[in-house]
Image 1 (cartoon, rainbow, N blue to C red):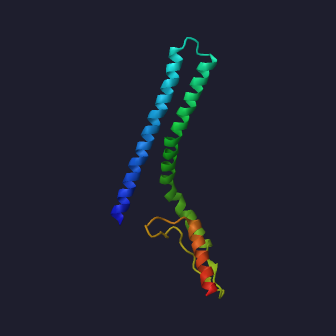
Image 2 (spheres, rainbow, N blue to C red):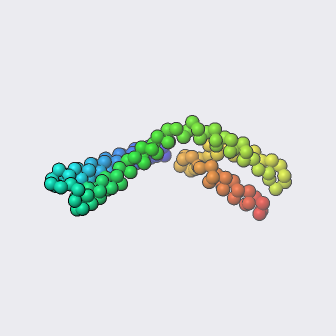
Image 3 (cartoon, rainbow, N blue to C red):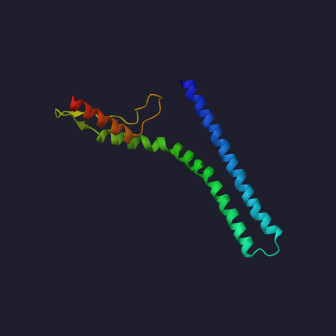
Length: 140
């Protein structure tokens, strides 16, 4: 099972790399079109030329948003484990609840919970699952 997850992860990394390369090539192409328009026209400050260069520049910026957002997400993912662990532990300590008998039930450590595939479960989802388990036990 871990072998399959490893293959899926490497496939996703390759797809992400291909997407970033295609987006950067398209952005460079649009910037090249804007530059070609600037170099080939005699009067750059004409309505048609300004429109063409602004549209090409905007399209280049739109294509550059995808690699930029994946770069920011990767950078935040590297920072997240250091700061996320303390916050989730504080949430787990404060998350103790009382059962129907009034006893204080031990809080769930949300940083340790994983789904069937071994992926970490977000804290809000884990809280909802615990709440639903409490409701099932009180109904029966």
